[in-house]
Length: 459
Ligand code: TRP
Image (cartoon, rainbow, N blue to C red; front, side, top):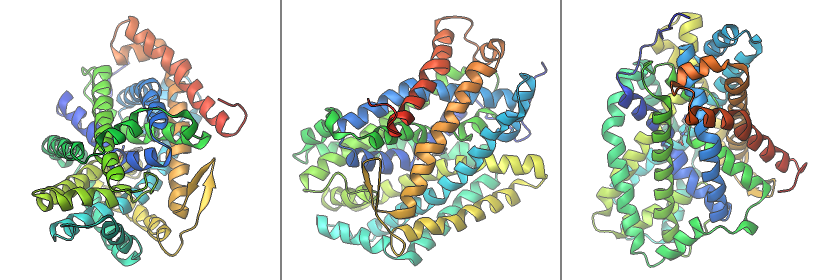
């Protein structure tokens, strides 16, 4: 086989890929979503299921997704078509690419609205609005923001424009430099917040909530949410990691980079949880407060610590950057496909994709005010209407199904020779272990979670 190259360029080094993939993985999912869904689902048992999913489903599928991308060297749609052909399989496999592109569009549509909250909080915090704030005060500032569609639209528009600008310039020049500097600072700020939480008086309660599993607190829907979140937080199942893999130099070890990315992603999420829950308990707040959780609790820390206005402003700036480096990967598969198949340049392609996603974002904007409604999904109470529907549809259904299909393709439909060549581990224990996980454990786990949700089996 002749070696393919990507027309969109290549990462300059192994480190560049690690940074870009970590940039994609670490985002709102870790700092905003993980704490609020852990809170809604009773903590410890949910966190345990999530961790198990990251290690036994997420890591093997991430390796599969990167190896497929690097072998195909094109947008996910064209990569799947090329590999299916090369492995003498049916062309239907390119459906993975199409479904992923749709999932990416749906996700970026709400992701950008939430990222807009982070941008809004940069200015709110900088203005000193949180100095000495009470829990009620912080909640009402948040309520004021989300009940105002015009403000939400303005911030959403700004964030989407930021995403389009970077994607237009190409992921390499646009992205690589940004992540190198910002990731470490975000990490330090999270440590600072955990340090603050340690002195909140309720640190142990927070840890217990996060790490002591109480299996009576988790529902079928909670287990699905934990698994879905493993996909969401690692950016798996829709082609984002596949397209990043397509820019990965051939000599880099996929196993090593994937493990590094998964560990960093998990550490950031756990640190966010350790910063937030002690504050929740110290202030008598509700762990199940929903999507507003971090926006109601973190201002309490920034409002009362020395230098809080400065640190708080910096924190929301970095959260915005973390969301930015993630949102880029959500539209890259669609942009790469438009460039390959429609022959238009990156700037036009990103503007078109960003435009569609921007319009769709209005659904999420209205979900927190005029169009809000409540419903129950598999034992979980939801109160943000169509936003929750979009979230469940993408994170809990489309991503696991996409990941399942990728695992089956890499494990059962690609020849052993191809995957062994791409992973470059020889025929040793690690390769065998990966193949076993990707053929049996990961697919079975996904199927079991779906079956227990449908009530076919009880676990
Ligand atoms: N992983 C990112 C986060 O946790 C979100 C994200 C970026 C994503 N690209 C993705 C989620 C692709 C699913 C699929 O914030």
